[in-house]
Image (tube, rainbow, N blue to C red; front, side, top):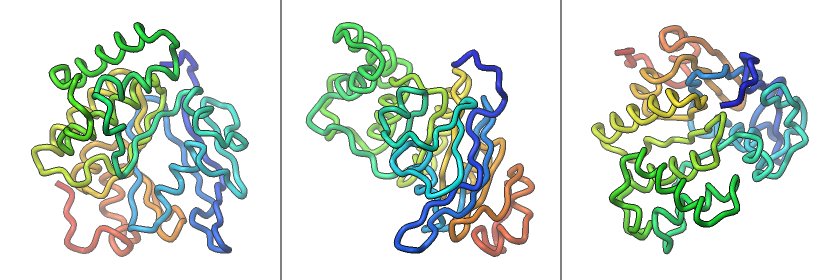
Length: 248
């Protein structure tokens, strides 16, 4: 992790993204603090993935600023440049390089930081061991189960040595036992000093995992706070959680 002592790792200020005259994200202010797990929730189409795309350099904002480690990221619009500066990402739909082995997939992430094939293989192997996938290094990625493909995506992102990891619905499609295993893994990643910014629809998971949560609705942030505060907020209940939701 960076030695930068600034408590706010990622800050968005009045960030707006417009497509075809419609604001997918509208004047969103967020602060993700170093070392925390920050959750982002909201209905489908609320702008969550668009916000991730802005932070990770896929899109440029129409207005507003994005700061990472105190530096303005608003003008950086190439994802590899964002990655080089310390932001990693997974995606809603996992897409490993299907005809490569798990080890080769993770090596691709390592190559963002090193040039030596031997060093990349060594680091990728160590990451897969740490992830509990040491016995699957030589399996072709398309042959892996969904939970293992998701873990492989984690491993490839971690191989870029991020300070901030964006996780987009990493628990979608998993059964309750697999969700619990993923929660254990995410907490383990945070213990390594990596800050997590998580979009998720599995409510009991995001509520138990997050230190802080924001909710988007129609592209706007309508509330943020602790999981307990979010679960009790009438705006959040009406827009997303529903009257029957009870925080366990």
